[in-house]
Image 1 (cartoon, rainbow over the protein chains, first blue to last red):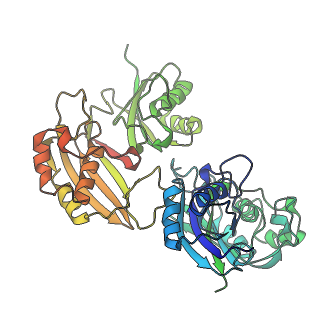
Image 2 (cartoon, each protein chain N blue to C red; image 1 turned 90 degrees about the horizontal axis):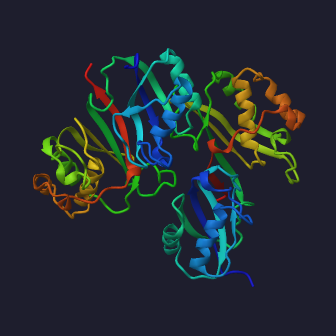
Image 3 (tube, each protein chain N blue to C red; image 1 turned 45 degrees about the vertical axis):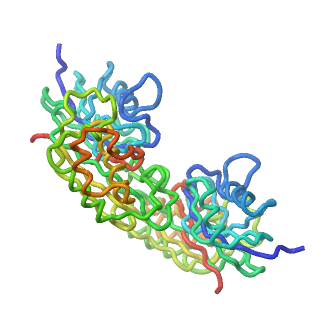
Length: 249
Length: 249
């Protein structure tokens, strides 16, 4: 018998102390602590579905999940109860009833990620878990030009973690830009969906461009090659933030 | 025989993973990791003196220390070597030769601290180690008025950790103000010197004013009482930052 309610949850978390989103046999995960709190409030063994299964160390400002339940607890009460039960590094921003067919992952129309690179003159001791530190000079105009090459519908196989079990590696990127502010580089990418490690592999490649190891003009050829070995290394997780997930209204 | 050089070191650290500044028999301390790095570079067993012996969990943007040595390593080389050896949560911003009589603590003319209170509508999961979270309404104008009462030369015994071994608890505060910015309260205090827990006890008292448990007019009487039990509780350490230490030029 299907559940009577489907509930959408918007949440933020500091990914530093999590082994990523997805519940595992061992290790602290966001899904794990969220489902543990939900079980206490809703009863049973609630299962959550997230828009993006973030990796260990990756942060979220606007993750979205959904959970089905028969509980009659009002959405606002559930939000307050969750925030009372969840650990300090997870915050629920919104809880609302949605239609039965809502699915946080399959129905996501687009997602936005930001990757932060600290390229300031002096390293900050406060950013170790929140940005990638770079202490070599970067050719920002070249990186900006390279970033533009990711826009459009492409087969991103060259930027996908090897062995990812996906039917198609074609994705559409609508925004791909670099913003420099107070010594920090913010790479903003938005698209229909993302392959495993796709943003971090793009960052690794953009950094190669920034150091002169690749020319901005090389990017299109790397995308076309569909060859993971042609693109740059996977940038570390701590600079990455899942910022927003958008759904058809 | 006295050392041939006296070296001033300006440093910043994230206090989250430290048992404070002062070296201890056990536990990770800023002085401990700094002296360990200095020993590798300078040889011997260098002893550092800090301007402010920050407590566990307290951060520093502009801590100052000095160390005496006979090493002939240039200051700039020492800075680079320190940053290469120090853990990620400590950064040395400047190293310079100073006169033999320089003493980071005794010669400090004034110090500035900032305490950050996160009073925004939505708690951030990223601020747990970097601000005090307050989710009750605060009377900011009353707190601002109360903050002004700390300015001047006063006997701050009511705001000193019980049992502090000091000759005098008279200190001069030159700046004591609250700034509200994007849902966060920044309390800025500057003065000739600070007693143990003084800033945190002032914050605990200002929060009592903010909740209506004390009137701004009560502050002067509390200072005059010299009675620790009259003032508010000690606010937690994670909101506190040693921002700057100034010396006679």
